Length: 273
Ligand SMILES: [Zn+2]
Image (cartoon, rainbow, N blue to C red; front, side, top):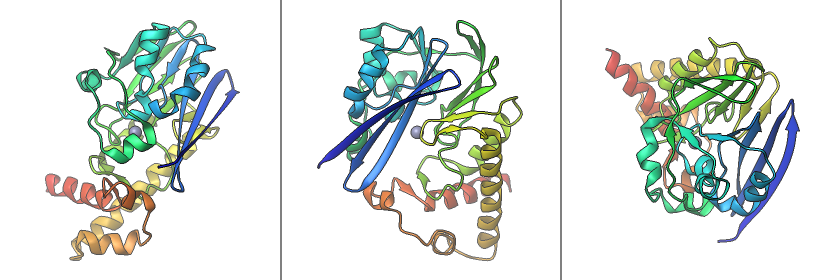
């Protein structure tokens, strides 16, 4: 399969970011990583290593922090560890998984390549960079080990894949909408304005964007539960709320699907009854 790649670099408010894009058969995906105050947040994908490596080489990096274990965030971690010899920190939940060769499906290897094993250390609740203290905020939902990072000096929040887009239409099988809602409420208790998202990039009115996403998901959850209570099956709810056929559903053989949104909401409710 023909893979097209591109890369862009820019700086906003002392944050330098690299943004790599991969296109396979008309499906285009992108991923960012960010550098501020000697901290690199996430490491891009292995399929974009040729593009990301020169970017890393010219940055002044003391440490790497990873938002979650997915291969588009950890793809160049092994390179940074071996070649640039910087320490890598992440949630302890997926440390062992990242020490192994990856076992994710083939379509993800087409897009993001094969993430090489690396050895990260557990990050704890806070950390320090040259001029700032940072909060490590647990924000599961998209991934079990997902963390967001807040630079307390600048009020800049790095949210990994917590946001991605306001109106979520498809999610991964293991994602949970109720957990995402809880995580959005958690980050909104902190003091921040700007948000740096690994896929949407720089969000100037980041607080507002996260509030809007929270509102969208809470409404969606209510609509799903109403339809469920009136006897609609998950696939009938999907046909009503998500009639569009997204290419990623086909591409991923259903690992991404709107149906997972519905199942996660119904499942959570059945636990609370
Ligand atoms: Zn992810």
